[in-house]
Image (cartoon, each protein chain N blue to C red):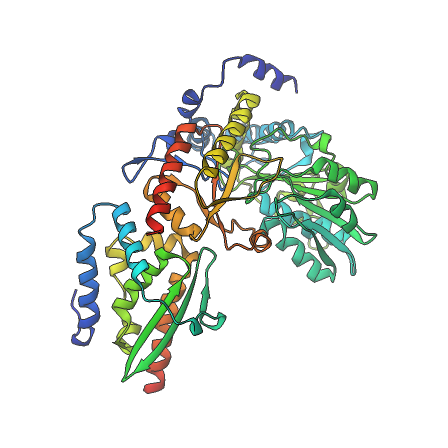
Amino acid sequence: MVQSENMNGLATIENDIVEEFTLFDDWEQKYEYIIELGQKLPELNQVYKKDEYKIKGCQSSVWLNSYEENGRIFYEADSDSTFVKGEIAMLIRVLSGQKAEDIVNAELGFIDRIGLRQHLAMTRANGLAAMIKQMKLYALAFHAQKS
Amino acid sequence: MNDLVQVRNKTTSVFDVDIIRQDFPVLGTMAYNKKLVYFDNAATSQKPSSVINKLTSYYNEYNANIHRGVHFLSRKATDAYDNVRTLAAKFVNASTEKEIIFVRGTTEAINLVASTFGKMKVGEGDEVLITGMEHHSNIVPWQMLCEEKRAKLRVVPISEKGEIHLEEFKSLITDRTKFISIVHTSNSLGTVNPVKEMIRIAREKNIPVMIDAAQAVVHENVDVQDLDCDFLAFSSHKMLGPTGVGVLYGKMKHLEDMPPYQGGGEMIHSVSFEKTSYNEVPHKFEAGTPNIADVIAFGEAINYYNKLDRDAAFLHEKELVKYALKRLQEIEGVKIIGQASERTSLVSFIVRGLNAFDIGMYLDTQGVAVRTGHHCTEPVMDRMQIPGTVRASFMFYNTKEEIEIFIEALKKAIKLLNK
């Protein structure tokens, strides 16, 4: 896959994650690793754990705060599900601190490559799919404002 | 009924779950190299080979449109299709097969009644009564009706144990109550409601009652004449049959009075641009080409129940849930949601401090299939002040050994998530 230069940061991180996941043989090990990531995710400041930051799913909810600093977008988030928190940790690792344009264009192929696409699809309910959309929307709004 | 009795007398053998399991090919599946433990039966049951084979044989041997063909195949398909109406009528002891309307499932059955009978009976300022443990499919159609008619939807509250108190039910029936729709067996709490008594109470005031029996017909014998309900709905896919088929039972006098649900072919008597006259019950409610293949295979699901030693199978299910409850209560932090004294073979629970979805996902890694979330009963979760539960639901083909695998996996999940 050819990546443009400014996509490099994002693509490299995605590749790193995919490589880390090659260590795991099965779904159970992947699950345990994602739970571990979730347990390590820094706690979100309570001020953001309000309805206006909440993305409600029927299995679990996500709270997302986005902000811009020096032309780059940053995200912090939390969930009532540790598994979803683990997935959030990966998304933040890939997207947070990137340029708005790159976030908007990010295909996030790593989700597929680490075998999590089906879980994401299955749990349309878990707020995560909506969170990715929200992350991109914020970047898009910022990008549009800038140009 | 004679056929049924004969069939049942034939099966005098002891209930042997190992032999039963051989009828269900999917139960031999390996999930992530582990033996699949399927405890999501309340969402949909697995299908026996006879049902699966029936689908194939229909398409291979007599696929044709029904009720209008003049040819060999069409007659064969029509006979097979009509025969299922008779089977379904006997299954719930309807007085005639004309009282059986094929629909897509319980949801469509409720929508059908709400938008035909409901529209006829409910007017401005009237009330429709449901309970606090309804599935969304027995809430939303009535909400839509009430909104349209400026009527009021009233709800019988449920107790901490997940039960309805008949006194409260009685007190909510007013002169304005025009329809009552209640769930027989709760899909999220496992509660079996005293529907017969509730219908009797409603009958005193001449209020028609609809029963959502989606979870009920699977685990007990349901007799519409004994219940004396006006309408009753259930789905094929929860009782060993294919998806996309369900039954609406309705008392003949209501079905005759009701306007059609959808317009199209099959439901008409004659059509001109000036005036259309409608076909007789039940065809009046079955517009268009029906789901022929799945209805025919659904007949095979009913046959399976008829051949099964149902008393023994239902007893086995009761033992399974009793065993699961006992084993779950031994685990610290587990709280059973829904502790009704009359219950079906499912158990809903939460684990203190843990998210139901996380637990369900871990169980999945161990090949154990459960359902997590609010089970399309958000008001129940609000009432219990929890976001959702883990639900394990059992069928007669499940075993105590499977419950052991589930319990071990659950213990591992708790350990891992509490790190």
